[in-house]
Every structure is written in structure tokens, then in C-alpha cells.
Image (cartoon, rainbow, N blue to C red; front, side):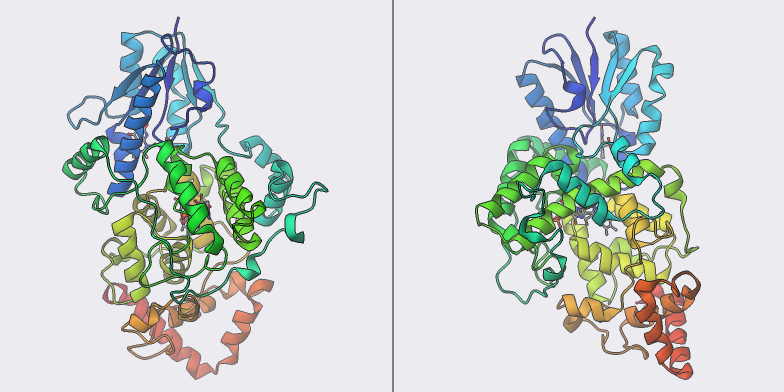
Length: 510
Ligand code: FAD
Ligand code: DLZ
Ligand code: SF4
């Protein structure tokens, strides 16, 4: 008897473990656009277009390879709301020997699929996801017995394991593991940032854009100017575009922000890595080749590989090690509602406005905007972790729980008590001023801390330091901040805290 193979919307790889040993013409494949997956958060409209269009293209490729594919198109009137409904229906029509799938990327759906064996009354084989470079077990073994997990040490293990940027003698290329100290430059317009890669929508994508605009008009963002790749071929072209035009400057301007350029020298590859159109090892090897060929410097290539081989694998490991408890963590006891302007961009804080605006238009903001602008503001104001996590899950094209949650709850909000990162990334307006040109366009004065026109980040920063002195006062990496706070006289500190209290009471006015 043939098998039924389920492929999810973020599993669009021909070498997916669920497809191993599959026989075209015998085994059947099921893929489904369903309401439950499209609506568990207010996914950015461009994300819905990307996933649905990429799913449709992938199903077409499987058919060309001779597979019999049942593809369930999104239909708001369908009785099938969830993946289970579609799979049950298929099992009734064509009873399979067993259902085969690759383990799902997020806890919510994984829990459901693990119950299908009983609920559908047939064997369900769930295969490990071999698209990651560290398996869940391998990460768990590495983490065992460590009180705090540090990405840098995990990353070195991964460099040794993969041999990426390693000499034949087992040493890191160039003599250092990490070149971050070279990667902190402000960008002042030169060299010009390359235009991002564009794939023009074909008829399948245009059809999906109409569908999303019709049925998901209440979701965040816009479908205007959709130009993401939706096939593996185009995603590989996007990778080649990055390597040629942006990678050489990726390191230098990795932390820079610009009022005029949304993408700077970033890769814009996470949407493809996360839905299966690109393989992480292929991406790292392409970057490594650019260094060996003399096309990009070591600080750029090492910094880029570290993001994928280090951070991406590290946050995934933490997610599976700690869920479901991790999602409930709130160690700083935050209880503030997310300010409404996160959904509209309607704020006079120019850095926030620009970051939210590019998020709305593109479904994208680069890492420093996510971490040091919208993330930093949520940290300083003490937003409830659940609410800010839901925002990040909704608004980015690359957002999936397994990668969004540790980044937001751990890296940004420090809500896990420092399990993921040794100190919170709290910063005043000074940091944003140093790394961007936003402040010159802003109604607020970055040089001021009190007074009506003072940059809100400044007083909020000191308020954060003051209210969390118990948690962070003894943290060696934060000693300097506390010293600077206590160096100011009592009256000045009171004025700053008063200004911060006013700001906290009037967030929606800022
Ligand atoms: P580049 O800056 O060019 O980096 C190259 C690649 O490295 C990325 O494509 C990505 O795959 C990987 N990478 C870089 N940083 C991280 C990181 N911290 N964690 C995991 N992978 C990383 N990334 C997501 O893929 N999905 C998310 O939902 C997501 N949510 C985030 C939420 C917050 C609050 C923060 C601070 C970061 C989040 N990130 C997320 C990480 C990072 O911001 C994005 O991966 C990156 O901006 C994607 O753009 P890029 O491809 O141009 O990345
Ligand atoms: C994100 C997403 C969306 C928007 N829609 C679908 C869908 O209709 N069908 C599907 O199979 N998968 C979809 N996905 C991906 C899943 O919701 C889920 O996030 C991942 O499979 C978890 O790794
Ligand atoms: Fe942002 Fe403050 Fe600069 Fe305005 S002055 S752009 S609010 S950091």
C-alpha cells in the first residue's frame, strides 16, 4: 500500500526527510493552504503571499517529478479549517499504509501532529528535520549541565563540526573565531547600498496576491510591490545577488541603520531559509567560497556565517530544549500593553516610525532595527512579553515561532532570566544616534533627557536601569551603566525618573 506524505508550508525542500525513499507514481503527497495556519496570528500579507505561492510552485515541481499531489487551495468556505481535516479527508479517500511527515518547526502544530496517530487511527511516521546543522539531541547534549548558554561557544563547536572557515590544522581561518569588533561602522551613504534582489511575480503569485487581498485584508502589511522569490531557483539567484553585491560590506555595516535605505547590506535570505527554499549549509558554503576567492573580507564572511551557523541554530536549539515553558517566561514582571503605534507606525519617534513603516511595507526590518529600535523600546517600557512576541510573529515575512520566540522573549526582553543572553540590550537614544541618521529627522532631541522635546529613549533607559537594579546591579557587564546612573545627583535622577513616568503614562502620544 502507498504512503501519504504531508509537506508543510515551511518544508519546501526536495531533499526533505519526509520525501526520502518516496516513489513517484505510488506514494501520494498532500499540501494544504488552510485557515488555521493562515490565521493563528495576523501574518503579514506578504508572508501569506510568499508561503502560498511558494507552496503552489513546489507542488508543481513535485508533479513534474511524477508525484501525485493533492493540493488543497485556500477556500474560506471549505469545511477543512486545519491540516488535520485535509489529511483525514485524504486518508478516507485513499487509505495509505502510513502517513509520513517531517517534524514540524513549531511547538503548537507539533503537539497536534503527534496526536494524529490516535486521532486518525493510522501509523504516523515523524522524521527528524535534517535541514538544520545541529539536531535537537546534539544541542541538548551540548547544553546539558550549563547554567547559562552562550552562543559563542556553541558556534565554535559548529565551526569545528562543519569545517566552515577552519584551516586544515583545525584553527579558525584568519586566526580569530569572531571579527565582530570590526563590524560596528555607521553608514553615511558610501559605498552605495545595492538594490535588493527582485523576482517579478508570475501568474501564480499574482493570483495569490488577489486571494490574500480579498480574504486577508484585515492582516498587517501590504502586498504592494511583492518581489520575494517563491521558487528555489529564484532563491538561489537571491543568494548569488547577495554574495556578489552586499556580502563584501555586510560586516562593516551590519549594525548600521539608515533613514533612506531599508535593506542596506543585509542578505534578505531568512524568508527562504525558513521555508525551505534555501539550505543553510549551501548558504554558508557560498559565503565561505567568496572569502577563499578573495571576493569578500573575513570580517564580513565570518560575521555572516556566524548568524546562520551560530545564532540561527542556537535559538532553534533553545526553543526545543525549553518549550512549552519558555513561552510563558516573564522574569522582569512586565505587564504593559503594546502601544498601538506598533501596528500603525504613527509616532513622532522617527526611528520607531521608520522601522515600523519598513516593516509594514516590506515585511522586513533588519536585525538592528528589530533589536535596538522596536525591541529596545518594548524592553525599556516593560511591554508584556506575550504581546511583543505576538507582534514579531505577525509582522515579519521570516517569522516562525521557533526563531521569533527566543529572539524576542530571550534576546530582546530578557524575560528568560538571561538563559539566552548575558545582559539585556537596553540602550538610550545615544546608541541609535551613533548607528543611524534617524535623529536628525526627529521631532525629539537626542541630546536631551528631560523636557518635552527630549528623546524618550533617554529617560526610559535610566528608568529601566533604576527599576531593575535588583536584577542587574551586580551584573559585571552592566556595572558601568549603574555607575553612570549613580554619578548623577539625586535631584537630576528624580527629574529623569519623573520624565520617564510621564512617558510611560502617555506612550500613545509619543
Ligand atoms: P542577515 O542580517 O543578512 O543575516 C543572515 C542570516 O542569519 C539571516 O537570514 C538569518 O537566517 C540568520 N540570522 C541572523 N540573526 C539571527 C538571529 N538572531 N536568529 C536567528 N537567525 C539569525 N529571524 C528570523 O529568521 N525569523 C524571525 O522570526 C526573527 N525574529 C526576530 C525577532 C527579534 C526581536 C530579533 C531581534 C531578531 C529576529 N530574527 C528573526 C533574527 C534576525 O533579525 C533576522 O534573521 C534577520 O534580520 C533576517 O534578515 P536577513 O536575512 O537580511 O539577515
Ligand atoms: C506559516 C504558514 C502559513 C501562513 N500557512 C500555512 C498553510 O496554509 N499550510 C501549511 O502547511 N503551513 C502553513 N504555514 C506554516 C505552518 O503554519 C507552520 O508555521 C510551520 O509548519 C511550523 O514549522
Ligand atoms: Fe529615536 Fe530619540 Fe533619535 Fe528620535 S531622537 S530618532 S526618538 S533615538
